[in-house]
Amino acid sequence: MKLIKKVSSLLVILTVGVGVFVGCGNKSSEKSAIDIIKERGTIKVGVFSDKPPFGYVDANGENQGYDVFIAKKLAKDLLGDESKVEFVLVEAASRVEFLQSNKVDLILANFTVTPERREVVDFANPYMKVALGIVSQDGTKVTSIDQLKGQKVIVNKGTTADAYFTKNYPDIELVKFDHNTEAFEALKDNRGAALAHDNTLLFAWARENAGYTVGISSLGEEDTIAPAVKKGNEELLQWVNAEIKSLGQNGTIREAYNETLLPAYGDTVKIEDVIIE
Image (cartoon, rainbow, N blue to C red; front, side, top):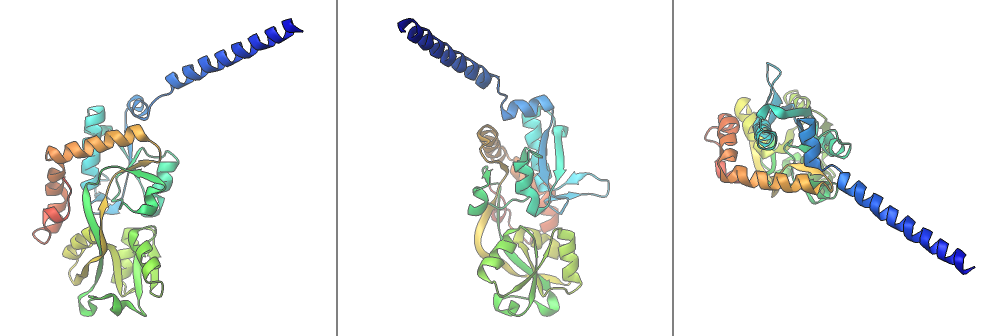
């Protein structure tokens, strides 16, 4: 009986020991997020295709814009070459899902930081300031929310504008679209009295489209825009945090503004009101 107990105890010890050994082996063999990106040879970044001057596809089929400029700099610093970035086109409502399903490593798609979004993604250091704005036709310019009562407001699904009006003004009817191009065409077709979106986008759009004015330049609180990674991806988050800080300190963020946003804004916007260095 004693012999059986001794044998049983020995088997338990061996089993536990093997389990610990195997566990340690598996842990050491796990590849980090950075290693996976380096082995792949590209970093997958989610960007917009129709939101100039932040993320868009030009006439030659090339990705352009402020977010794209920064994404290329991240690729250069991580992989040694700006061309080592794989752009994945996203819509506002699909950004979280693309991270959660590993379709992208990083989102650089004008992603406004909100408490609700922090619950499902991890935001890195911000690189832009933003607030909501309202654009409308000059002939029926909207300068107050009171003017929108009984009217329709155009928004993009899954944006902060959508969430803001749904929460704060449930009596105002929203006309929602997936794509920015669809939303702005709806405004031109008079399918809404006004369009609500990021003021940083509206400043540029109104300057390019005669007959429209950003009558409300700041609605609600000022927010920030930041890169986002999959929830729990601590290694990549820490790397992006350090990288965004470095890009601000070495002048790259300012360079991105001058090359991509300044031509769209001209002297109508102050650089310090938009970028974070």
